[in-house]
Image: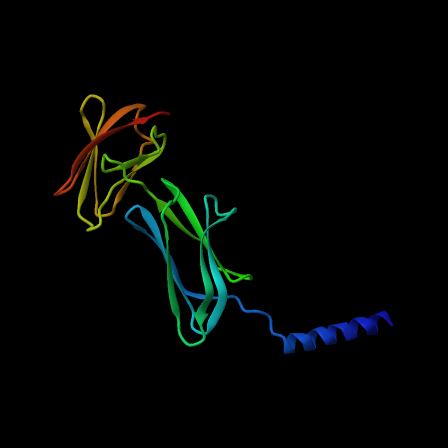
Length: 201
């Protein structure tokens, strides 16, 4: 009797599943984050034929615990076309990775994306960590992908390393640097900046 009852229950669940389909996860054509002025611009598009009721934008510092930072009300998406959306995070977490996730309606979530927001200081660069142990990074503005040169000097004025890039940062390995104070020059056609950092082992 128990086996027969279980069989009937499975049949009923199967039939209900055929009549009432499970809600499909909302998919996105793209989802990206970029820096704009002193903020982070999020852009995404809900795929053609999919809709949801409202979008909540959430952010996290560790990719585990998310807090809402914005809301787009109303029906989102369209049965007829892919619909683009955007949101500006005007208060991103500075000099660390920001994780973003979209809550699409009440039962669907986007993948998590991340953006390392670097706040360039008045000195035209951001250096972190400082003091350094095995590595440090120097970030700067380079929207036109110009050639930048980085020259490192020790405390006696001796040149110990020279690097070039067309990116907006240098990742500097300091594991072989003796502990001490170092001076650097950051040079391009239009920029010449000096700074210093410490290495400790």
